[in-house]
Length: 389
Image (cartoon, one colour):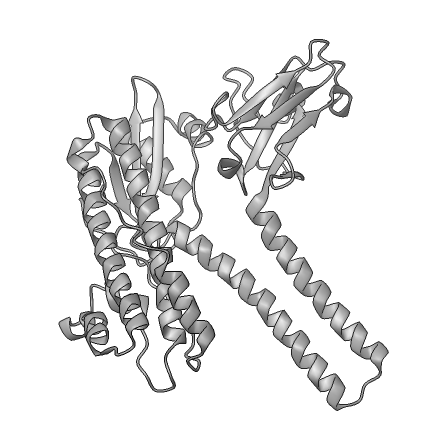
């Protein structure tokens, strides 16, 4: 396993330059109104045990993401205010470790030269965001060095699952089947970037395994990669909207009939609507597969001894619950070849009964309900419901 090292913030590009307008000035006020995202935090030395260290590490990583988002919004507003030929800001110019001292001083120089009070204040907020992020990064580095967990530095093409399996078999000395069973119970990401750190810890006394990802030496976290993909979907939606508007102009110029115009407009509107619905569905739905426990064991999905997930390759999560519209899934025994429902288990076991969700079964066992208590935890996730009659 590799040694300890520091972290860098995500890199991104700003908006294209457009003429200064009153709308942008109003946006400056709105963005400045976001205030200081960074706040006084508990120092890393105050955590007393591993659980507290992990909780504080998660809080600091979340605050880095939130502060970065706010900072990028401020940069976008500032760049939108620049006239053609005026210098704009890039996120990478503020955080890159490979820049010269002159390049790293770009933000401070622009703040000193800015004459407009509103934009000067905006730059001051961006500088403050930068210092907040740097302080949080130092805190995260200290926490990482305090934890007993080991890590590897991600190389191009590495997969979270493969790295974790290597740790369990070679470092924790577990057999492959045991290692795969443990991996079924933890969250993993396929959105690694070269330079990320993937962390591991296995406690043989409690048979507990944890793994997670931090930014490490990369320019992006897995969360930033997911957000980039989301922005790409939004960009595609806006592209279709622009194509619709262009088509309308061209149709009018060529004096196309109203029927043709409406058909073109409707087609583009439908495409845009489908993209918007797809974005909303991905963000807000819980995807699930429900089946009786016996059939899942017969398919080899569940272990008949440990009652744990063994192999879900053949499972299709073809049902979903839009968590904007409801948080309850009703299960009827006849839909799963059963006469009654005695028990429902939600897998993987990373979700906790009573905290994240509850299972309610009627007294006559004629139906059962899965009630989601923490919708944010389940958005965009896939779960398996094993039903026992």
